[in-house]
Picture (tube, rainbow over the protein chains, first blue to last red):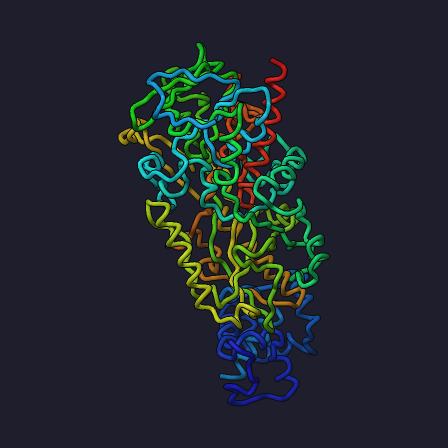
Length: 102
Length: 515
């Protein structure tokens, strides 16, 4: 599993701000795009109320930083998807990525 | 002095001040403390100076419950005992391990870690360890490359292990024992009966025998049973002529609370770039120390989990590694050891040299205590006896959902902390992913660490021995070894076995001095 290329699999890339939101920066260095999509799909299935692109963008705005994600971990706002212990924010990023790259 | 009990005249009476039964790490550690003292020490070994398969067969037994290794192969029945094939992993138990933990039924030793501290320091040299330093900072000062994955973390800390060469106690201390004028080693002297006074408050003698058919009597002022966790229980249960339920078993505790360390691959750790993580690596036979990730006492309390650690193995090795339950599969301990070592060596050979220098993916493997469980136990097989007429053992190793929840929680916590620190991400392996799944996969292994069957307690209703390892109700019979452990903690038990044995030895010296 190498670092992903964010253009991989994206049929209809949204604007650059959305692209930034859907990039789980740390995770993208250790997971490939199919894995991120898998995690994103798992999050959407597990959290149907956040399954739409609009909702995910709203929840991730205005921006996501490494500190946002670290804060999730520090606050225990974590979720386990396919065994991955992820911050809520990066799980949402994966979900958005999985929608945007379908 | 060494005597082969097969060569003695039938019905020889052997007498001494103290009789130690067993020459493994517990028995030998005690015996060595008595060399050059005015006391005559009788040291009994059921086997010889080398492996003897006919004697080894006395350890054969049946297993029910959780899948386990062939019992015959998990302990060695000759001079030096299981130190003849141990791996040398050493680390002291933590203070919390001795405490009564309200979330763990039957936890709480009648002694504290501080009671063992001076004995841990002495135990170090017996198995040729380095300084008694288990603070990672001490080692990091010596080698700055020993960088912590999670420095100063409130939930996850670095538990230090030191590695014995590993010392084969029989080989190392055999010459001293043989040359000793006051330690009398008898090999091929298997304890088959214990005779007490009436009403069973003191031991008068023990009976030993061998496959040559020679039976002898040993009399002493104090007796120490140091025959391993399974055999200690087996012997006490077998001595049921004078004590109907077995010696020391008035409260149906002997053999219960058998504990093992669960050893199981559990998670993957992913780093953004390759890192040697030298602090956590082991090169067998070379490395003097390493760390495993452990959950802090504060977080154990908060999460109400058992004590466990996670060791790291580079993916390059881990992808080829087999679980020990799959390789330690022969009744013959020599074959099991060979299979086990060959498998480990092969997985290292298959790994590329690059992946060994640094990796961005590591397998996390658990070693965790099991909760003390009265249903996890040793009993006697009513229908099967060994060649000396002793009933064979049955091990029923039983785990509970508590262990599974603890393992899962441990990795969720580590996953949370590596995420918080921004250093890695963690993925639970499949068998831990469903929180409602309490089953164990087929590769679930034990650590070959048997503990708990004559547990320690101040109260005879809850323990077989008291805080000095003396059998409740019997004035002069002591038990040495991990059978006295109340809880299993996370570390390999040998260092604590030796420390507890040294403490017992000091106690016995005081006892005999006052006689």
